[in-house]
Length: 344
Image (cartoon, rainbow, N blue to C red; front, top):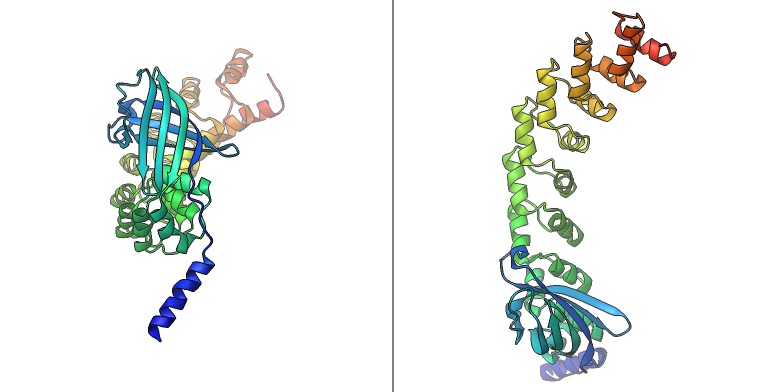
């Protein structure tokens, strides 16, 4: 009975799964040999773009060593009737064409791997030819899919797997994030951390700077705006410690740098509240502006008065014009009043 049940199960599964097209695909390719200095590992790479079917395009960067038969010699390489092969778990590409000054073009044929299809089809269903080509070119192998599943992602679709692969998110990256305190991060957030550089290393650096347990949103936000550990340390040296994440980001957005703070301090504006620093930058209270006012006898203005001056357009030139007209030693309120009412 057990044998019969197993046989029926296999037959049922085979009946449910649609037949898979394993025929060869063809299309055109273009390529560019990349400067090896730009490659993360220093290995020569080739940027490949494939066009196939009804205007479908797929591209990636492939290490030169993986392109069998492409014996390119430098990014200015020129050769005709070039033939090379790219073997992937999902299938094999056979390329033919030529290169001029490191740029190539030609035709290709892609042959899907039957064993890959057989292994992937039960979980992901029938794979269209263009899906197989994309999975092969981007090297979404069975081993990669299994390793991601083993890190707690058993239900990802092909698009998520492709997205993780494109952005260099592998099982090791996921484990590092988990060790840093971030487990079962949604795939979209994994990609965000990678795109914006909020990597496990960045997490550790922020923790060392005193910012532990940040949300993914906060990690990404600080990375995007440069409110990073180096900025935190410089702020601390300038006297601003225990600044919350949102304030760190606001300071960076408005250009409140440690150098800006130091210049203001040298002009007599020390230990300004963070809100005043942000208001200064928003309204253009620069060290140069403060310096000009000091030279005209207005060196004791408060932060609020400086901002009020800028809002109402009380410039150094305006004050000089009034002084030349005989209006000297005016108070800060008098200057604002004169500007509001258009007095010269």
